[in-house]
Image: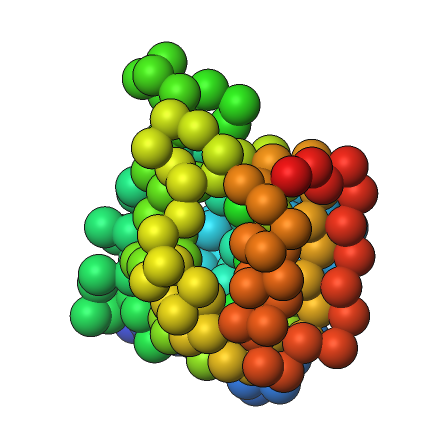
Length: 196
């Protein structure tokens, strides 16, 4: 009797139930229903840690919209995702990239790495990027003025269809024209409070 009980007890512990992959994908797609990426990031991160079979669908949804709002987040994203052999393939899932450089960098010395370097460090990284949303971009002062190679680097966003500029300061209308012409597949341009 004792051995039958222990058999039932141990066999129950080793039994695992597996959901079909399609069910897991549907569950995870409902997690990412929130309008803003920041609202569902923590939930998707938790889903990716549930079990190994949940990781692909969670990461796919996690990287569909990338939202970077500080120099620190940008630096972490570069080192932990872009330069990571294991994480970089997930960037092919990215459809929208939101970059919100802070008005002051985290160090308090004017514009930081996000304003100065994103064109170079992120060029060609997102093969399926459809939308780029830039807010508070200042390329007029503090060493953030775009170099000639910046515009060539912007052409690395080859699949970009929509560009949204908001509260941006550019050195001249010529820079605006060069930015627009850098994106060869651009179909929609929206700008709000853009100055030059």
